Structures are given as structure tokens and as C-alpha cells.
Image (tube, rainbow, N blue to C red; front, side):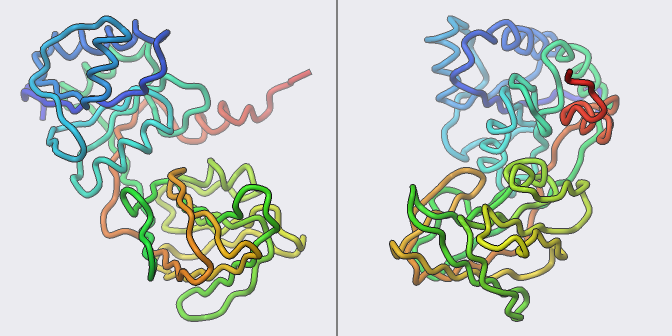
Length: 294
């Protein structure tokens, strides 16, 4: 891929006005390499109106109507999750520029933009393949893409009483979880919502799924790790007769009668990694293991 004219689909966080210098550095770097630049319409409007950055890209697109060699996510992990949902099965690698704080997915820091993109144009890149979860229901389907890079959560609504989640794996009944909800997480999502609820950290590409309870009624209900080729079925009982399903944070109300089926998706998401950033080094630094906080 070295010396090839590359195209990039640019997405970004529309609330980070203070980070305009990083955006300008990125655009300048891409133009210096004579890249073809396509920009998501809401982000294009944000650049023009809020950051006063005026440019003539090769195209402005909406929805999923785009194609490129790479996608660029300017923001934190939440922005990258949004980009992953937009990419779907296009198999376009995502370059995550970390404009946030505690990012595990967005791997390139703003100060690394010039050198990182020099490597990309030279073909010196590393990509990781990340599995997705696919959600299906026998009723109303979740809004947006039915795929999750991080997790799918089944949760009680507002301040309602706890819900009962009946879990079946590969046709075998597991149990009835009385809790505020459960989280079904990929290895990628094991350091997100699942971790904050006591779930284990799962190394990427470990071919597993974690089921983590949210505030369970019984302390004997613990997270469980299963193979990622498993079929998970969930039925919910609630006093209010409805509950929430959140797919990578995109939540929607559903009724008690809904059967939810979660399986591994048929496609993966490719994320570009900085070869200098090692997984356990990043994990240790983000989690501040061994740091004296006195």
C-alpha cells in the first residue's frame, strides 16, 4: 500500500471546540500526502460553523453512503463506537485519534498525528480485528445497526424495581438473574461498562464473551465467560412490563414479551494500531496499576 493515493472518510466529535488545533494538524497532514478526503456531513458542518475551518473535501456524505481506504475517528472511544456502527461490514479500517481521556480504542494521540500518518502512507501499519455482537429480537428491533463492538446491556428503566433476566446459552437454561440488568460484552468491551460492574478484563482476540450482572440481588451471581460462538437468549420480567436494551450505548425501550437473541456477528471491525503502543502497557497506564496515588 506504500506510495498509493489513499482516501479517508473523516468522522468526529462535534462538541470538542477546544481541540481545533488537532483537526487542523490532521487535515494539513492528509493534504500534504495528497490524500482524498471525504467528510461526514454533520462533522463537515461543525468544522465550518464552529471551528471556522473551511476546506473543499473530495466529498461530503451522509449515513452509510461512503467508501474509502480508511475511516478516521476524531474523538474518544464513544466516537469510535459510532464510526464502527456506520462502517458495518464495509471492512474499512478505523484510525482512532484520541481526543478524549480514558481511551482504549482510539490509539493515536494528537501529538502523534504527523508520524502516525507518515507510517500509514508508507504502509507501515498494524491492524487488529475485533469481533462484534449481533442482537435479534422477535419484536421491535433496536434502532440503528444491530451490532455492538463493546456490549449489549439489558437494564431496568429509570428507578424501577430490579428486573429478572432469564438466560439460556446454546439451548441450556443458565438461570434467572435478579438484578438491575446484565451486560453481554466482547473482549473489546470488557474494559468498558462490564469492568465498572465487576467484570473481568479479557484480552482482545480471545474468542470469548462475558456476561456480567449489574447490581445483582444475590452475591452468588457472578460474571461468566463463554465461547464467542455461543447463542445467548434472554427473556425479561419486570414490574413495569418494560425494560431498556442498550447496544453500544444506543438505548431503546422494549416490553417483557420480547425474546432477545445475541450471537457473534458475521463480520469484524478492523482498528489501526500504533505498533509502539503495547496492550498491557496501555492497560497498565490507563488503569494506573502500581501508581502511588497518595
